[in-house]
Amino acid sequence: MGVWKSKRGWWVAKFNHQGKRYKREGFKTRRVAVLWEANKRQEVNARPSKEIPMLSFQELATAYLEDIRPRMQLNTVRQKAFVYRSFLAFLGADVPVVIITAKQIGDYLNDRAIKDGNKAANLDLRDLKALYNWGLRQEIMEGRNPCNAIQKYPEEPYRAYVPPPEDIDKVRMAATIDERDFLDVVYHLLARKSEVDRLTWEDINFEQLWVRLYTRKRRGGELQEDYLPINDTLYKVLYDRWKRRDKSTTKVFQFTGKQLRDMMEKLCERAEVKPFGFHAIRHHVSSILNDSGKASMKQIQKLLRHRRQSTTENYLHSIEGSLRHAARILNGAVAHYGTLEEEEQSKKAQD
Figure 1 (cartoon, rainbow, N blue to C red):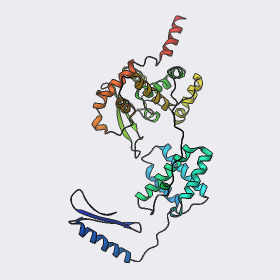
Figure 2: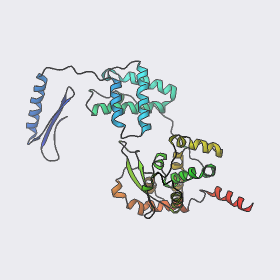
Figure 3: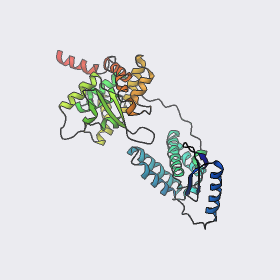
Figure 4: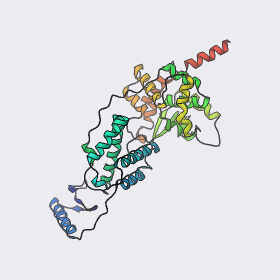
């Protein structure tokens, strides 16, 4: 709000009054812009004021969820909705947003921390803060974000469980051929479960040796593309699967949502190993690359796709350069991957 000079060289004046925005640009001098703002404020203040209906917390939450639904993962939207329902239940009634205090939010978070831990409370604080920030940006509410006055709760450092190589091999041996293919794609691309589940045959180029993954794990929840190289092992897995593909669908894998949710738990139980999920495989492979000393941190970050980059700028460079080198490490240097399976096959052949 206020007066500023635009990149085009002219001055702009802008302010809000009773939820309505007033803006004008094209002033040649700052003084003229300031005068316009002052006169306009005087004009709108002189108008008969209209009573603005108070926005309730539930109305704000509903509008926010509807806005983010097309851009964010379904699980993210569901989690936010759960937080807002829980907070409303704690309040005991749907009240205007403007009368909710930082103390009320703090009391809710304290209760959450006692029942479910500090990490859960911090996640709820993040979602409540995002809700208020959205309302302020949309200019459908006035005031400040009460969550800004609340400090995060101390958390114990989170250490992700990284399964040992032998446990991953045991899980692979316990898997069906379709489950094993899914695990191998996750392993060699350091991919997320949802990214592999979304794969179609149009996303795989056997001639140029790349796979296109789609992810929403970026700020704003936008669906974005990443191109990753195919090493020799992954090529064999995907090409064998393509030869026996179901021609009635373009999807590479046809697991249901429930099958994917339960897959790792059932496989770990069948293999009699400590439970771990698909995401733990990403940690496992990145640890191998880091410990090998043959892949730089920058290469690993690119494979994990933790950095926001333009797909068009890095389309060929990311595949032909450093990432191709890192993929070869997985193909050749990670000798333990699949060794238990080979030993089992060797024993059967001898018998």
